[in-house]
Image 1 (spheres, rainbow, N blue to C red):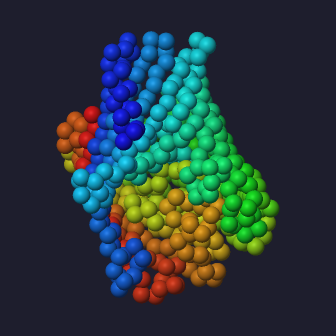
Image 2: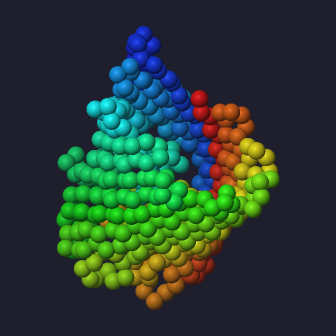
Image 3: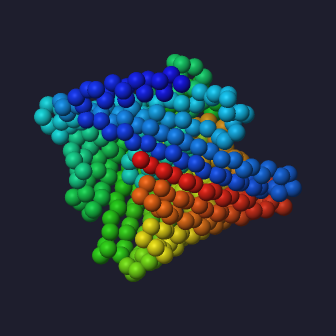
Length: 419
C-alpha cells in the first residue's frame, strides 16, 4: 500500500512539472491447470488456479537528458484474500531507477536503481517475464554505444537465493558486448557471481563462491528463409575447495519456406554439462545464473540448462495475420548419469532445494518426451490471448524409481492487456 501511495503522489507531482511524462500499464490474468506433476496418477495432485499481475509505470523525461522510471506491480492469486474486504500487501516497485543519457556529451548512459536486464536469448540473464513477479536487479549499469553496437557493464546486488541474513549478499557483475556489424548479431560476454552464503554443498559448505562465465553468441538470417542461433558459455572459478569447470552449448536453426501463412520448421540442441564425478575436487555442473525460465526446455518447465541434453523440433504457421500456432516436441536427457535432475531455475550450488531427483549411476539418463501446442492471438491493438496444452511422457530415468510412472499434463489460458 505504501508503494502505491508513493506512486500516485509522484504521478500527481509530475503532472504539474515541466517534464515530459508517459504512463503505461499492464493487466495479465492467467489460468493454469497441472495434473500428475509427480508422475504418479494414483496419488492425485491436480492443481488449478488463476493468477493476476497488474503493473503501472511512469516514465519521466527531463530537459537535461535525464529520465526516471517508476513501475509498481501487484501479483496475487484469485481467492487468495479469502474475501475482497481483506487487503493483501502484494504491491511493490518492480522497477525504480533514474538514467543519465549522453554523459560528458558521449554515447554513454548510466542507469542507477532497480531495473530489468535481459541479454541475448535470456538463457543466462533475463527478465523471467512468464513468472508473475518477473525479475529485476538492484544495479548500476553503464551502456556505451547505440542500437547497432554497444557495450553494457553493470554491478548488481541480490539477496534472493536462500540468503540466511541481511549480510548474505550476492554480487553479480558483468560486461556484455553486442554488435550487428559482424555476421548480423554477435555477442561476447563475461559474467561474475560472488556469493558468501553458507552453502550446504559437501566440501565447499560454508565457503564463498566465485563463478565466472565467459561466452559467445551469434545469430542471424540467410536469404530471409534461414535463421540460426548459436551460443556457447564456459564457467570457471572456485567454490571453497572445489574448482569450477563447466560449459553449456545451444544450437538452433529455423527454415521458413513461404510467405503465405509463414510456415516454418525449426530444430535445436542444448547441452549443459553435469558433474561426472561428485567425489573429486571439480564442480562440473553448469549453472544457468539468472535466466528467463519459460520455454527453453518445454513449456512445463521440468528441465533447466544444468546437466541437460535437450533435442527439440517445432512447426509453426500463421492462419491469420494476428494469430500464431506452434507445436513442439522435446526429447530430454541428463548430460551425465552421476549428477542429478535439476529444477527449472537450474543449479545454483544448493542441491537441497534445486534437485528433483539424484541420478542413479548405471541407470537410464532419459528424462522423457514433452509435446506441446500453443496459440497466440492479438484480439485488438492492446489485447492479446495466449493458450497452450502440454504433456510430458516420463522416460527411463523417472521409471527407474517408479516403474508405473505415467504422463503429466498442463494447460494455460492467458488474457493480457497493455496500455
